[in-house]
Length: 235
Image (cartoon, one colour):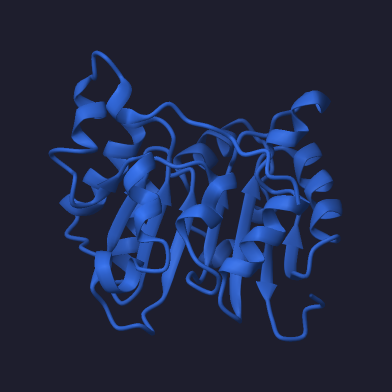
C-alpha cells in the first residue's frame, strides 16, 4: 500500500494559539492528545491511557464534529472505551467537553488524521468504528482523500479485533455507491446496507446526529452500511 501519508501542522508550532488550541495540551490534556502524543500510546491505550482490563473494548469515531454522537456513545456504553479523531480544534474540544460534562470517563480524543490511524493503534487493538458523514470529496481529483476507500479499510481491518464492525453513514449517494465498490475489494463482510436509513428497519436503533437532522429536514435520504470483520472474511 502507498505510504503517502497526510500531514498535519503540529499544535506546538502554532505561534498564536487560540483557547481551543491551547486547551488540547492544557485544560483537557488528560483527555485530548495532539499529533505527537497520540502516537506514543500505540498498543498501550488500554494499559496506559484508560487503565482498564485488557479485554475492555475500545471503539473509534472518525470525525466527531460537535460531539453529540461521541458523547452519547461514551455515556451509553460505560464499559467500553471510546477514542475520537477530529482535525479541527474547536469541535475537538467541544466533543470531549460534552462527554466529560455528561459524566463520561471512558472517552479520549485525538487531533489525528484518520488515514494515519495505524500509526496510533496497533493490530487487533480496537473494536467497533463509526464513520458518520465524512467529507464526500465529490470532485474526482479529490477521491483520494475519501476515508471509506480500499486502502484505508484494509489498514483498519488489521487494527480491529474479530467480530468488530464499521458503521458508515453519509448523505452523499454518489460517495456511498462508490464506497460500496471499494468495500468489495476488502476482506470485510457487509451485514446490512440501505439507501434510505429512515425508511428501513435500521432506523429503530439509529442515533440521529446533528448533520443527520439537517439532511433530514431537507428531505435528503441517509445511506448507511455496516461492515464486519468475521473469521469467514477472506484476507
